Image 1 (cartoon, one colour):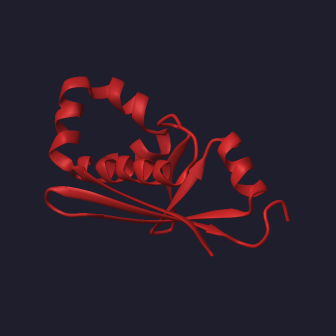
Image 2: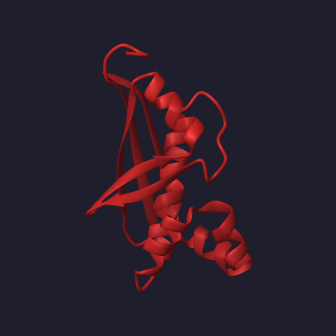
Length: 125
């Protein structure tokens, strides 16, 4: 059963400007090492980074409390993007029997993320 749905759209040029202004500092503040390593494998890493920012924002729209940028991040399982979580968030998801589904997309000017938070049976069980 769907518990929550979150979506976010990020302008790629905005992320490009942010990185031009703040460079390495912005990368360290906003992204997990796994996200940066994945993005830097691409000729242009900015669309991948923009999609990852969108994923963080989309998950935040599903979550009942504020999170820091690095408490949720995008990892890869093969070619499939998945959300990964800091221990306290992961523990709460498990305690409430919740699973987060993620879809990412980007094109020339925008990156999109959609998160579906699924309840998989009774909480705590």
